[in-house]
Amino acid sequence: MASDQIPDSWRKALEPVLSAPEARKLGGWLSAEEKAGKVIYPPRGTRLAALEATPLQEVRVVILGQDPYHGPGQAHGLSFSVQDGVKQPPSLVNIFKELEDDLGIARPLTGNLMPWAKQGVLLLNNTLTVEAGQAGSHAGRGWDAITDACVQAAVEGGAPCVFILWGSHAAKKAGRVKGLGKAAHHLVINSPHPSPLSSYRGFFGSKPFSQANAFLESMGRGSIDWSL
Image (cartoon, rainbow, N blue to C red):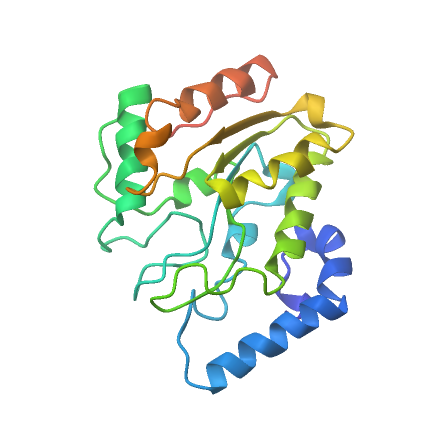
């Protein structure tokens, strides 16, 4: 996890944690896994893509998931997103179903969420890598400290933000948001993961998109165009 991979806007917030022994251990472990022939998603060079797409000072919404998609050609560094032309995974299909129910926006043909990122939606996972075909395989390997620092930087950035936490892994970050001094300036939306395994336990009907826009507008930060 070399520091030169950190986008400039995030450098001050992340350099301390990325220079710590735990981050170096994570980097060494990832290299060893790849040398052993294991396929890791997303590929090198895209693992901090969410930070590159959404500068810290522009963050208005943080959508936090569990870990990247573990199928070939899916993960590209933005949580829940896939590149143009890639079949939409079930979780993303459910996100788009909720989007249509919430705001009346028809399901997009693309699953590429980069237009959201460019509007200040930080598409972050709790864990930023995964072994091919093995969901959750890189949990507990050291990514938590790095994504905790990302969340903390957004909380302490000064401007009101919305934190949309999908799933139990993401929900663990809620305490970090609420435990920081400026938490009163932010909105936390916590619901089950959009995966088919949990979406009917409260994800559907949670209306995160309209809630986010209402809060942002009330705070003078405009609204997100959630269409793609």
